Structure formats: structure tokens, C-alpha cells
Length: 197
Image (cartoon, rainbow, N blue to C red; front, side, top):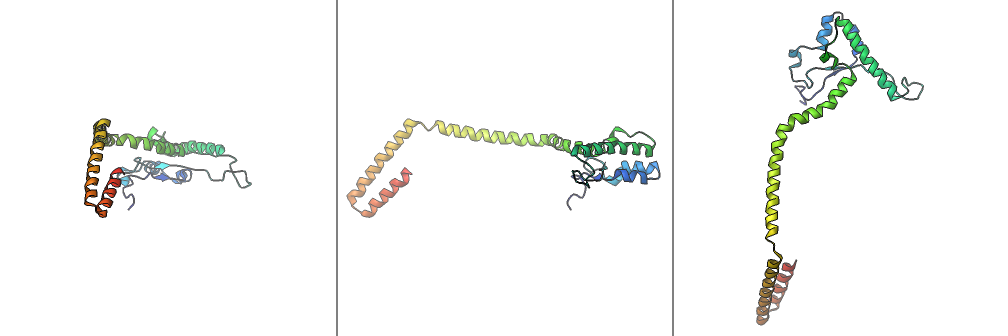
């Protein structure tokens, strides 16, 4: 099941302009526009459906196109939203509430979808902040450890360690030479090359 409780789903009922005239009684429109809570289970994203009407017809310059530009099509959608609100109010016999109006039309749906990521972000801040603080503390500790390690790398001390190693290496090479083994010479050269790299 992808989203059985509809908690991540925005429900959109289309063709409102065709559906409203089909209702015989205002109570039917009431139930349609504001479904009972038991029907929706209270989990639906946005708490209730959106209702839209989109005019049919293509946008373009061809002979079968109804709209000559995107702006003309958008204007027709806006007019359709107003007509849907008027038709709903006439069928109900009352004015729609602000909440009911906010569920009708493509522009309302678009506004809801645009605000949703911002709302989700704000809701998740209490969870994000502790994680960011933990990461900040961890990173700060690592940075302090690195700074401490770098501060102990004194150039004079490094040179002294290098000279001591050099002297020790030469001493070992002399010992190997005294023994005269070719194998010892090769081992010494390999050890020296490894240390230099």
C-alpha cells in the first residue's frame, strides 16, 4: 500500500462545474463540499479535498486551438473559479465560508501546494535542530583534535626526529656493510625508500 491513510495525498475532485448542477438538494452539495470526518478519517493531507474546474480546449495558434496564449487560458481558469463559487453558493442557498472558498479552484490548490513544503519544513525544525547541534558538537570536537595535533607538529621537533632517524639509519647501514650480505643491503635500501615515501 502506497498511502492507505492519504496522509501524503492531496485529494482533488475535478469537473466541479459539471457536478454542481447535478445535485438536487443543497444538503447534497454540503456533503460533497464538506465530507463528514468519518468519511475522511481525519488523516488526509490538507484535511479535505480540493475542487477544481479546468476549461477544455488547447492553447496555441492552430485552427483547433481554443486559447491563443497561456495568459488567456489562465484568465479563463480564474473566471471558471468565480463561476464555480457562484454556482455552489446558489445551490447551497448561502455564502461559502472562507474555508470552503479556500478549497475551490486551481489557484487555491496551487497556493496550498506551494505553501506545503514551507509548512513541512517549519514542522520538522524541532526535530532537525537537535541533529544539527549534535553534528556541530561532533565536528567542533574533530576540528579541535586536528588543531591540537597540528600544534604539536613543531618544525624544530620534526627536524630533530628526522636527524635522529637519519643517524640511526646510517648506523644500521654500516652494520649491514660490516656483515657484507647483499640481502641486508637490499633490506636497508627498501626500508629507507619506504620511510622516505
